[in-house]
Image (cartoon, rainbow, N blue to C red; front, side, top):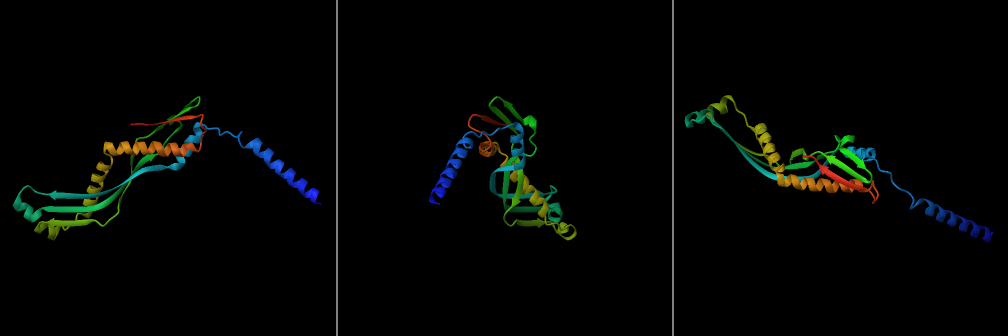
Length: 194
């Protein structure tokens, strides 16, 4: 009985060892442009940088005359904290953006853009209106102020120095993403289209 059990354990260990030797090192991953394309498209919009800004805006609605402004003028002051997410839209990449020549793969990515601008703090709003405007056209200016705050933050976020950082981060993230797909003998080059 003991000999049968020992023989069974030895055969089992030999089977595991032979299976491991046959299949562990000889597996190679085939990489194709379709595999890369599907992997990138599944990511959707890849946010590679998020920035937080404290932004202030002033909206002056003046008639050009101090007397008229007393009755019809308006000054809106607004401030808040906004978060801007910037990255690359990977879901629109097509087969034409990926070229394979031998063991070299070149991927062309679109230029970075803003995916979202979020208000992450209360909006502080001060509104000074002329007498007639306050009575007949009382508008707090909230929507106009929010639109201008977002516009100003978007301009700051897309400054060339910031975009350069986003491009660097995008290349790093895409390299990490594709690192699991390929073996060492494949060279991947990532180009961001201007």
